[in-house]
Length: 283
Figure 1 (cartoon, rainbow, N blue to C red):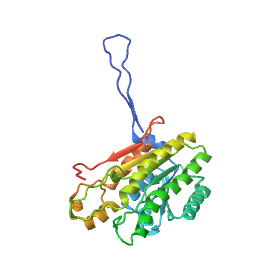
Figure 2: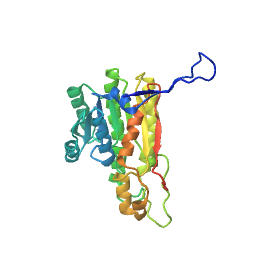
Figure 3: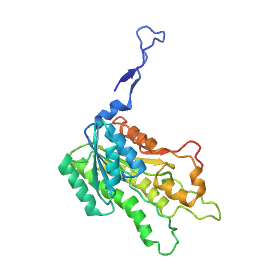
């Protein structure tokens, strides 16, 4: 990666040079992650797949935790002439033993985890006040919150045991910062989803404080996109609300690029909370 330096100018004081601005591009900074191991949950989805693809292209060993091996295998088959490699590790992140087994396999195979991207998430159609919604409520919280925490726990343990200053990325949502206003007379689309994403916003800060307490040197970042083409929020909402089809949307690759930005900051910089909106968003 090239380092571009600004030419030193003369401000009229002979022998006094103006400060040189040094900018290092993302490709150069990504070299730190070459050969390192990244866990990406929910890699069978649009956003997770885009993130996994970019990390593999950057030379990382990506272990995709997913219940859908077929979709991950399809993604792997599409990767040609890339520096890294993609593995599918079948795992239900809501099951503690599954998570322990997955991280144990990664440790035995590659030595440990250097980066975690908590991307897996679900959204259900049920209202909070709807009858017979108990299973849907638990599913949302178990996946979006408990699963995230289980994976984070195992990743931090791996990073700390090897004294590696890794990075945890939580793929949050704009709904982790605001609740979409339902049009009067129409069925609300929120349910438990915003509550689970607000929790991710709080959990990210709690993790940051714990990483400092542990003197781990690890970073944690919450990335909150608006609507994204092909993601669960856009897909489910579009089926329930016609206007969602016409709302501006990000591309999955936009979120992947945000991840690359967050993980390539200098050692003294941590992107804590990054909100990304499509141009013209009117949520």
